[in-house]
Image 1 (cartoon, rainbow, N blue to C red):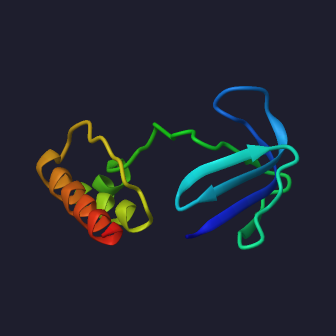
Image 2: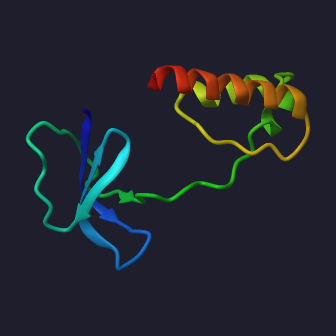
Length: 116
């Protein structure tokens, strides 16, 4: 079991009022958040002092593929790079759809294999 505690940040929850505090994540899932939360003794601590923490928020905006087209890289290369750093969900809005779909399928297969 892997536990991470993000401490000291300005936390903006999906519901409720923002606060300064801690977010605890266990095995990739948000376990708890609060202004006076105890950090589990086995947690890796990330100091977010002076930073905003947005637990559960999803960045739905990207220019994935736009820059790659200018440099000659295929969209599939960009998708593969995104998958390599942990991106697990991607919606392609066009361009090189076939190669992007293949790259997403490969990333999903790798993620499934890692979880097994």
